[in-house]
Image (cartoon, rainbow, N blue to C red):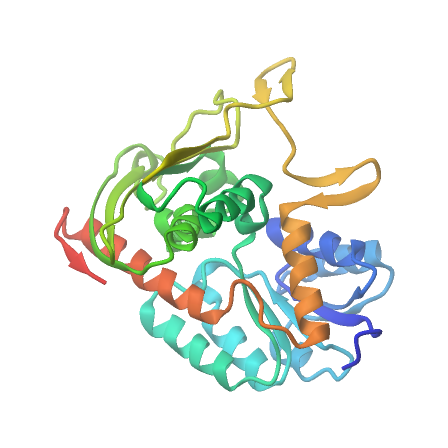
Amino acid sequence: MGRSERLRVGVIGLGWQGGGHIENFRANPRAEVAAICDINEELLAKRARELCGPRTFTDYRELLACEDVDAVAIVLPDHLHREPAVAACRAGKHVLLEKPMALSVEDAEAIAAAAREAKGCFMVNLSNRWMHTFAKGKELIDSGAVGEVRYVFARMSNRIEVPTERLRWLEKSHLAHWIGVHRLDIARWWIGREAVRVRAVQRRGVLAAKGFDAADFYQATIEFDGGAVMCLEGSWILPPSFPTAVDSRFYALCSNGVIDVDRLRSELLVAGSERFDMATPAAGMVLDQQSGFTYAAVCHFVECALAGKRPLTPAEDGLALTRVLCAIVRSCQADGEVVRV
């Protein structure tokens, strides 16, 4: 495929995140949304009307057989990634797979194996690497300005409506896979080593009382090859009054400095009629133009697919993260037993 051509994309999964992918691809001048797929026929028809006539499918396998599609974005619930990702690789499509890569090491290995044999580009959408704060932190570490990362404290949590109202299927996933993956990925990227040992605990109660089968919170200690240590925590029970839908903190103690990224140090404070929000936009429309880290990640995928380049977040990264995340879940289930990665 020549560099002057446009990438014809099929989006599989049209829910909360799928809609964002559609807008990001539409905003890229070198891409077009050629096809969309969802089992919800009403939602599929609604999206088709909004997009003025892309090809529509209720079966992803039929979309993958479409010669008018060069690439696919797989934006399905966490537990449904393996079959469409492997099939897309075998169909010769470029693949952007939403994080987390999979919920089991077996599934992640199957996807990674298919990606290695694939003709197209394969990228795991670890979009937080394109946040300016994390990209700049990586530059500082690589330049030697702050030395090596020795200890990381990271937290990423959601308000309670995310699992209980917005995405009920999260009951089939785990806090660590769904939201912890972002901060684990940044730590692994900055440290430049693999995790070797994990100890984690979780507690249940609040969500279970609401009929949602998931842990309220977890805390994990992760040791990396070379001696760096990470404390990773997250929860799904932040109250509706919490001023951000996502609470995030990333603190890296280095051998010659500190890097501290705190979401609550917000520049845009909005006092509405019902809630005080710290709502500094990190992605979305600004002055009628798509911008932010999620758009930058999609643009990177488009460029890699068209130019035949290796993406910043290939299948190997997704597999390595899945190994650690599954170790966290196993340790949580064993009430803090040490698990080797």
